[in-house]
Length: 160
Image (cartoon, rainbow, N blue to C red):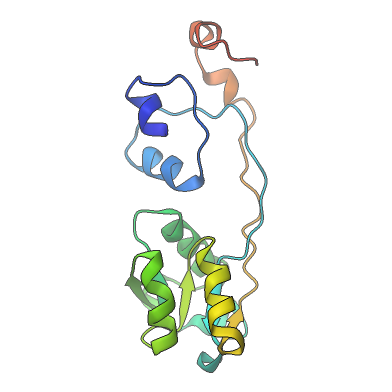
């Protein structure tokens, strides 16, 4: 949806964090009108990997999807654990490939979004463990809406 707004095909859109991240990384002009709080589990580990805390990920293989929210989740996860990408092996996978890789033991953890987290927990049962990795909330800095030029706010019919 953000592509439609940036391309001029829409005036406003709803979105998740991945398109917003991609737009910001591409230096595209974006503005937030509102934000929604959330706190989701994003990380599941193979129980046999022995990971009980985020710091235990050191030396482990983590499945993630480059260029998406998964990459953001993984960077946040590593930082919060006091780790860097050099401390782990990052394995770029599509979300639908993560479950089989985790089950086969070719990776030790996955960092992705729903429904892939729930599917992994359901399919692997006791062979999977949740790593407590709440992401907090999406914070919209004060004044962001006021940065939208006044004619745009009026022309687009935005209520601010």
